[in-house]
Length: 287
Image 1 (cartoon, rainbow, N blue to C red):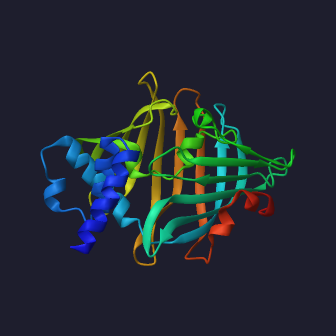
Image 2: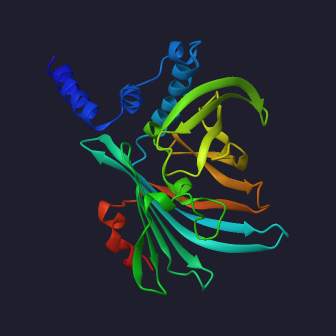
């Protein structure tokens, strides 16, 4: 009974801070698991939310991890440019429970003209993410405003908003259909950003495989509802016998003919990272 009262007080606080729809998503994600009945429902919205929440539930509890990322930028003429990145991320945990969005730090090690550039994101479930970019040539930290998050991330086909963790509460959902993609049975779900003002997208179409609820593909539609980009995930591998991570991601921009590929290696889970490793001051120290 005490636990129920505590949860009730938490819900009442959320009601004053979040729109009703976002509140509903938050409550769904508090459940320890998603039942087969929720996913098998004939109601597209409930089914879409259930699928996204199950994807999120299965990827909780990894605490923190680090990796090396090779980024290959390809222009419309096929010319390439390679960058090497140190990647770090951690969940926001309090008393063993995830209480906020993830924190992510990317540091560029090469080529020389971008070396030392660092990018920090504090994702949030109920408000705009906080993002900062450190530019070593200027020796200053630049805050990325919400209205600029649809812009290109350091010349790649990823936008600043693509680098944030995809918190369930930031979208509305609708299951569209089931179909086979890349030889796997998948749920196809439409998700629409709740914050329509500070996004470059009208909607995303997401393919979740039915076996592990992993995202296999995302189609991004621009504000005019024209297909803009497709992100595909390849070569998933299991970490700590629990968490799946793709070793290859490819973003293709159909409107400018460019693409960006990410190749992940040297991934280490529970790497001893601390909150102090994800502060604005850590941007300057990360060179």
